[in-house]
Each structure stands twice: as structure tokens, then as C-alpha cells.
Length: 115
Length: 115
DNA sequence: GACATATTTCGACGATTATCGAAATGTTGT
DNA sequence: ACAACATTTCGATAATCGTCGAAATATGTC
Image (tube, rainbow over all chains, first blue to last red; front, top):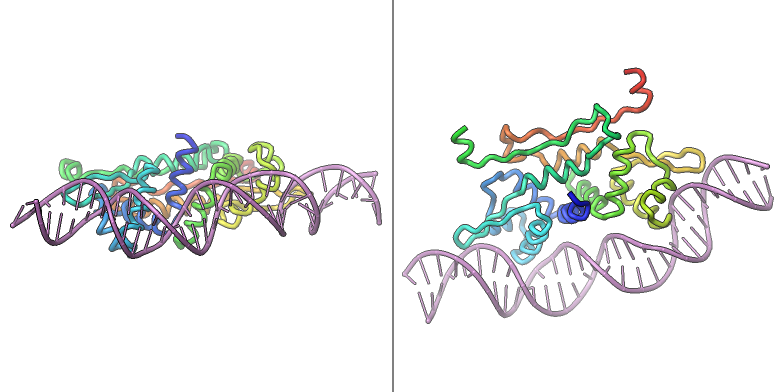
């Protein structure tokens, strides 16, 4: 993971609306949310939201897919885990006390059924 | 933890020099590093570095103490853990698959000796 | 007190960012 | 083809940010 990418990701998260947006998607899970639903949840005009979605997408933190006329956004958990891992890497010079980075492993609805 | 503080912390980290600086301190551990040593390690002019140190300090990510004429900076591990925890909070709606946030518990030299 | 060292504050500059309405694009149903 | 809906692109504006030299502040030494 290049620090250039990490800076881009952190910049994307370093903004009230985008931080709220990302957390909304993190908590929404793999099903994600449509742009319209996000705009309503955050109370942000559509054009502003679109700008923020583009920032997060460009940073690789969220992913877009289409469903009918709606665009559905989901958090990229792998990117989130990598970001956290990068920040805490070699914490305290690798002392045993420092726990390894957390990992969120998302499951789809189907995976949950078959488990 | 208020999202306002988190945004401040993320903004502080969302910059090449400051990200490198913070990671340097995270890896340096509780003993920390003097401003001069950091400036040399990063290849940044003293006045620029001072600006960045102030950003990180203001965001509560690092802490300053004095030793003679040097100012020693250390990473605030509690703040780092809180930041990561906030980001991953309630991941996937609280699904059991998602591991809890990582935690780095720093030890001082003395604590390590007596352990 | 004078001097060297360590670091911060000041001031100015160019570059990037967030905002949002209006218009454009893509999608669906008739 | 047309109308309705969902979302993005464009353009302009105000605000914030990173940079660094010069000067100021603090500390330690002689």
C-alpha cells in the first residue's frame, strides 16, 4: 500500500459529510445504499453529494454498482482494513503488546444463508 | 467521540508529510522523537515541520513534552485507537463476522522492565 | 550577560477544496 | 418518441491549506 493512496483515502474521509457518508455505508453492509437514499439521510443537495461520492470512489473507499436507475454505493471493507493496517503498522516498533489491526470481513446475504 | 474531532484528526493525517510523521512516531513508541530528529528524518524545513507538528498536536494525535532545549513528540495511542474504532463502529450493522477494532497499548521502558 | 542551539511565530504566496443551482446524461415505462 | 425519475457535470465563488525564509522565543552553557 503506497502512502500516496493512503493520503487520498484520508483526505476523502477528512470532511464532515463524507465521514458521515462512509460510516453510513460501513454500517449498511454489503447491500449498500442508493445515492438518493444517502442524500436524504445526510440532508445534502444531490449535486453536492455526487461530488463527495466521487471523492470517496476515487479514493477507493467505496464502490458503485447500478440497479435500475439507481446507483448503489457500498463500502470497500478491504480498503478500510488496509488503511487501518497502514496507520498502525509496526506500532511501538513491533512490541508484542500492540494488537494487530482489526479486520472487517463482510458477508453477502447469500453467504449468510449458506453458512 | 465527536465526529468533529475525528474530522480534525483525519485532516491532520491527510497530508504526505504529516502521515509519514505520525507513522514515524507510532513506530518510535513511547520514547518519542525530538523535533529536530523528525525534521532530519523527513527532510522538511524546521518551520514547515513546526506547522505540521502543530496540526497533529491540535488534532490530539500526538503529544509534546520538553527535555532540555528539545521538544519531544510521541504518538497518542489512545487517540489512534479511538479514531480506528470510530471508523469501524457497527461495521456491517454489527454482524458477528466483523472483528472489533484493533488496539495498540503502549508500554514505557520501565513497564517493560518490570513485566 | 553574551552566545549557541532548538523550535516556533509571522507574513505572503499559489494551490486546492466545498458549495450549490442549472443544465446535461443515462434509465425506465408508456 | 416522450415524459418522469435518478444522478452527474459544469461553472463560479469563498474559504482553507502547504510552503518556507526571516525574525522571535525559549533553554542551556560559559
